[in-house]
Amino acid sequence: MKYWYALFVEHNQEEIVLKHLNLHFDSSVLNAVVPKRVVPEKKNGKIQNVIKKLFPGYVLIYCRLTDEIYYKIKGIPRCYRIVHNGNNFNKEECILEPQEIEPIIKLFGDRDILEFSKVHLVNSKVIVTSGPLKGLEGIIKKVDSRKNRAKIVLNFLGNEKLVDVGVEIIH
Image (cartoon, rainbow, N blue to C red):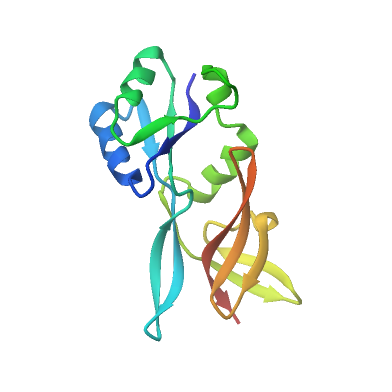
């Protein structure tokens, strides 16, 4: 059975590790993704949409982790280790918990970039009319209408992470 795992990789080397994984493994054996998000940023007085990593330093993989796959992954440059919960490596302790990975899968679907959602604010209540956050209003903690950003909470590797994502505010 296939499960989701997180690889801890060298900072800013996620794309290189992703390329190595795609070279070493067929997509029927292992799928790898570096989740990204689009956020608006103001530079030189102009607002630009910038693509940022959702979890810097991590690559997510979906596979049936065998010894052969494990040792191939260990040989990939700039990949430190498969994240696990115990002191010693154990395949079962590496599997990402369903309550952690399922909201992330819902957000991204078959894409690797989290695009803008259209948001309507009514009396401090957030209503998502379209986009990846539709149906996931419960994870939205705050909306900054001035910056066109929303703060969402994702559980990742046992920690709650507050992440900024871009939104389009509908008035």
